[in-house]
Image (cartoon, rainbow, N blue to C red):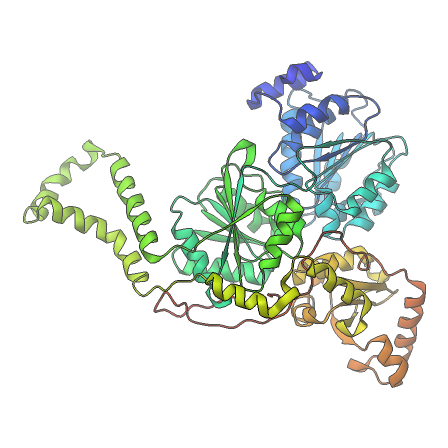
Length: 623
């Protein structure tokens, strides 16, 4: 099938030809003919890299032909990077549709400039939920004429706590509209959006629901926790031509790993929420140009990365939600190419691999962390190939040759070769001279699992969450200094907690937002991370203060004393708010989602494979 057979207008087909698209992908073949119809709600389930943007972008541009002064198309996506990528693609699709104006609106940049762009004309708006809600409240965006609403990466938006914002946005749009929902996975919350806002949608699924890209090879390596960073370096060294992503759980771990890799001579840069927009854009530009070989990123920051020819995704730590692993691995093997997703786990994390296998309908291979000899052999072969492939510029080197030949005349051909190779190769030999085996033996692994019993089974994550929901003793209740008067809502508070502390929405419990302050609950194991990361954070220009407050049961039995000097009137307001509040989004449970509660600490140790001390990241959330 060709694009001309799908029913697209000539102007759109001309832009497709300029882009070099040859044939539509399966998701495009299934979705585009349906979306060209006047009444066309759709749920598209496909992995990243399968052509989802063109699947909704081409018919969106195609269907806008008159009333160019009105906003007719709205695309909502989770991150700034994805917002910019989609808007750029739509502009390319509308290259020969001169009156179609695409405007991207997202946080982290001047809102006044975005308002000016919208006033100048925005036929299609591509937006992140938080910034769009802000623009609606300022009456800078009017959605009463919107005919097409696209929810891209819907599962990730819900995972980031955007449900309330999405509901608010969709309530501003006309009842008579087409809703196109695209997602890599189909948790219950995504199904609820389809049920509430769509009418008899066509469901297009490429592969099974939640199934991963079949062109990705999934390999996991079992190492001791203290050897995690050393194992990461070996996986990089054994792939000399690697161009990849390294995923960490939190901003702190991301920055720490990226800094250590740079210190150890690797071409690596971090990408996380603490970077300014200018810094993020600069890092992404260099990564796309391949001047950065390794991008160390958090899940949130990496959403929307659409870079071709990524060879490897390395999971330095597994995410807390299975769906995030699907998104991580989908960064490689795009456009039909092959790639590898490598996972580092410790002895206590085998159940996570089983859970991902069940959810994604895929299989992992147990890998062996390469030995020093293997790495040295591969690096030597790579070096020899580079020397053989190096172009000799005869004219440029000609005048220097007599001196060079004179300097080497006392050496034989074999000696010259050995010395030139050793200049680069010696550092690997020296570095790995005292290297040990980092693999944990299968026999030890089986003993550990036998001692843990059922605790290491994949379904344990759901059981832990159920205990979390039933037992208040597992929760810590926090006081937040901001409330409704500061523009805070449950969705905004949830996003703040998850983004700053590196948690997911399933890790946060009951949320109560009062007029001038708020409360939320989270598992005890996250207390330190929340106090360290969220306290002092910025929310829309306001500094956030977070403190621990007593649990409800303690207040009922223990009288009027309160932690941190909270007043009795605030306590009464808190309880009153609890009776009035429905609890926010934190109480919902994700089906087939996270891996459950986490525990464990972290330390600083010496890299066993180097004489220099290495500083590892603190694993406050590791199993």
